[in-house]
Structures are given as structure tokens and as C-alpha cells.
Image (cartoon, rainbow, N blue to C red; front, side):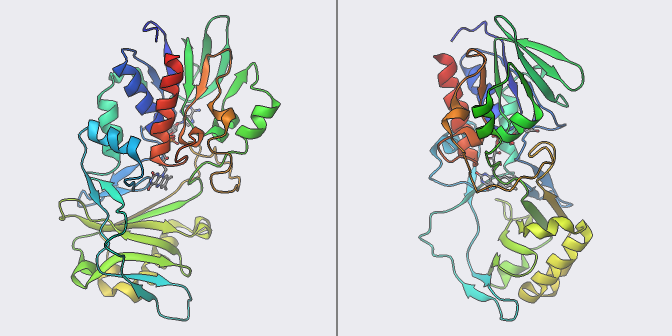
Length: 352
Ligand SMILES: Cc1cc2nc3c(=O)[nH]c(=O)nc-3n(C[C@H](O)[C@H](O)[C@H](O)COP(=O)(O)OP(=O)(O)OC[C@H]3O[C@@H](n4cnc5c(N)ncnc54)[C@H](O)[C@@H]3O)c2cc1C
């Protein structure tokens, strides 16, 4: 790889940051342009009143994700299994009590990261030079010049580069960025029909000052076909001294106010977990449909539709433009593993 190449990465999520980290290991400093005011994209850990790390975005991974696991090891981050011991609940009908079940010990564990998934983003960005990361910088156009590309942002900035790597979900990459010359009708038809994984989903977090459910022999795990919560899991930290839950709400909840979502959720949990559930220290939720994931343009598609399509892995503008978001990966597209695999694929392509 020519080390004097100027590389611009668009999007500071896991894929963009991993690519910048890999390029730096290869002696090349890339510039990251990130539209929002924070790094991480679909990874977002917030802190509750007791400083409990609470995941609004990506949370779990497992032994079937070797590229993510080796990155985690390399960055010296610590993983630990999702707590699942004790009575779990499965509610199929509103007019019948929830069924109880136990997760078999032999089941492949789901892991979480100590300190929250955000530690992965923080560790990657700490390996980069801070002057190579520009937040609040939304790219709106990429133009091919003779031997380089011109990148234009919505706040009037311009950047020239030899290579530009777009690390944002393909559908958004097409709807929010203009390409000159255009990518072509066939290419556009695929890009506009790539499902952005977890777009539109609603994640919630609850924080408590004790894990009263564990004391009652409960795992904190709930699957439900009724009520506002569809899935819920224990969210205690690795040290076992900060407590809570995380999970998903059903799609219809997007139409309710956050206050009503919290009220309905606590009502649903009261029946299973008793009085103590009614007084959380913190409640937050996030509907993932903003301008940084779907461009507020919610299109319903089949899960993983067109993810990993060959068209997403090709280069454009005479080899000066590549795409690398998790959806471009043919291995675990949509997941964190896919984001790391996509970055590794682009690195291989850039090395030639
Ligand atoms: C609620 C939820 C739960 C999830 N749970 C899991 C899980 O448990 N396990 C798992 O493996 N995966 C999970 N995922 C998926 C995981 O988060 C993604 O696979 C991964 O984070 C994607 O990284 P990425 O870099 O490809 O894309 P993104 O994280 O989407 O990053 C793209 C970045 O580009 C920026 N951007 C957008 N437009 C522009 C523009 N025009 N100019 C500049 N920047 C721009 C965005 O702000 C964003 O920072 C979950 C996702 C969500 C939303």
C-alpha cells in the first residue's frame, strides 16, 4: 500500500474506526468525517444515576464472531457472559400467566463487554490521532476529479483524497450522499434495497440499586408476545455492583410518548417482578430511526435484505471509492462481526 495516499473515511462507527485503526497499523493515517456529535454509530453506551453502563445499541456477541473477538483481545478489553441463571419468563398470551423456563447451561454464551460496548469505540479512537477525527461533519457529495476525489460536507467544508471509504449503511449512503458521476441505475437499485440492520428498533434500559430479581431466583430474562416489551435481559455490570435491565420494545411503541412507554413497560413487569420493579433509578429508551441510521426515511424491508451483495463490495469512481459498513459484509452482515469483517475486506482491497 502506498503510504502517501490520502484516505478519507466517512462514518465513525465500528467499521470506520476499525478501518482507521487497521490503516494506522499499516502506516497510513486516515481522516474520519462523522456526521453526529459522537463516535460509535449503532454502538451507544450511556450511564445511569449510579454510573451503570447501559446499552442503547449493540450489546452481545459470541464465540461465532472470531474477528470481533480477536479485535477485543488485541485492544485488551474484557468480555463476560450474559447472566441467565434462574427462572426466565415466556409470555405468549395476555390472558394466561407467563410460562417459566431455565436457559440450559450448555448453551453457547452471549458475551458483553466490561464497561459497555462503548469501550470498544473508545479504545479504537484512542489509538488514532484526535486531529484525524472530525465530528459534526456530515458528508453530502463525493465528486471524482482526474486523479482524486472531492468530498463536500453540509457545513461547507471540502476535502480532497486519493481514496474515500463510505462506512455508513448502504441505503443511507445512497439517500444522503450524491455521487458524481452517478453510481448507475443497477447499483442504485441494490443500494436502495439494503436493509439497515436494527433500523427502527426500540431499545430500553432500566437501572436499579439492587438486583432483587436475582435474590428471588429469577434471571431477569423475559420474552413476550404480549405487552410493550418483547425481550428483556439482566444488565448487571461485570463487577456485580451496578444493576439493571436492557431489552427491546415492540415497534408500535414508537407512536407513544416516552412517558407512556415507561408506564406500560413497568405495568408489564409488575406482574412478574413485584413492587420493587416500579421504582427504577433511571429509565431511557431510544428509537433507532434518526438521520444517522435511516435518514428518518423508514422503509420496511426483509431482515438482512441484500446484505453482503457483491455490488456493495465493488469499488467505484475508477477504484477511488469503496463501501464498508456492516451491511456490506457477507459474513454476519448487520452485526459487529460484520462491521469488523467489512473493514478488513476494504483493507485487503486497498493493499491490492
Ligand atoms: C438497537 C441495536 C441493537 C444492536 N444489537 C447488536 C448486538 O447485540 N450485537 C451485534 O453484534 N450487533 C448489534 N447491533 C448492530 C451493530 O450495532 C452494528 O452492526 C454496528 O455497530 C455497525 O457499525 P457500522 O460502522 O457498520 O455502522 P454504524 O454504526 O451505523 O456507523 C455509521 C456512522 O456513520 C455516521 N454517518 C451517517 N451518515 C453520515 C454522513 N452523511 N456523513 C458522515 N457520517 C455519517 C453515523 O452517524 C454513524 O456514526 C445493534 C444495533 C442496534 C441499533
